[in-house]
Length: 395
Image (cartoon, rainbow, N blue to C red; front, side, top):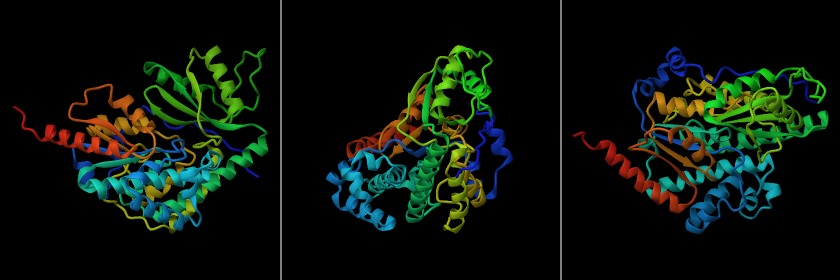
């Protein structure tokens, strides 16, 4: 049985990341931190982008490489996940323990095709990598920190533990669990976050129409801060609904709420057993540090500082808030990244990145999502034009 969980408020998303970076710069990242400006970031999607047939286009255009990659995945996992990816059904692919390794494997497949069929030299063309939640594992593989087989097995086992955590908390509480995105006007996000944190607490009383004392809401966590106008709540769905009532009646906010395609409360203390599993399991995995390309952590919104830092933050990622917006702002505003390449199924990541970097001048840059071969070719042409623009002498 799961023990009682405590939901806590993370550090303020508005804290000065540049100051934090100055205080924690190890020699292993000296070459990265000495660069005043970067140019290109590669990013990978997380849970929720899975769909049956997401590898079919790649199978049609690159049958040998796709078949080889899917067979490799099946061999590592010990069962035919490829059949579920290609043919479904959706009910099986959407299971956490299947969806997460499937997304990671297809993301890595797309990058391999980009490198081997289109001549994309990741090491020389990319300055930094990051991935949204689950996508962090894809980024760590692509950046050279983890071997594909090790990462895939970690992701599968971690997902199995997460699925069990969800089953246990649902049986224990009798409530449904999941995730809900709140969408507001960009100039309202900071106050919305503050109000949400004010309403979250350890109390167990439910909101009653006759009670205007606004009891605290327990078992809800801010799971993601995704963009200038979107956060994601994770936890008990009835309690998230109660929180929304409080926000609208007493908090002065009326965000649009969208239930996500997940029945699990990811990035909340419900997932503490998964965090414990990761802490132990990753100690037995061969980690290369530093990797060939710096990688930004979801938890700190800064590059991983050491092997020990990577182990700790990758474990905390199961329960802590995903600071995606802070990560994008850090790379865009502090490090000058102008080219953003999304690798993997779906275009959610591109849309989230575009909400930040698309609000300012991106001359000589852009945001691309590589979901099919046609987009890959278009992206390569655009990158070459961007390179010429950047390299052109200033008149």
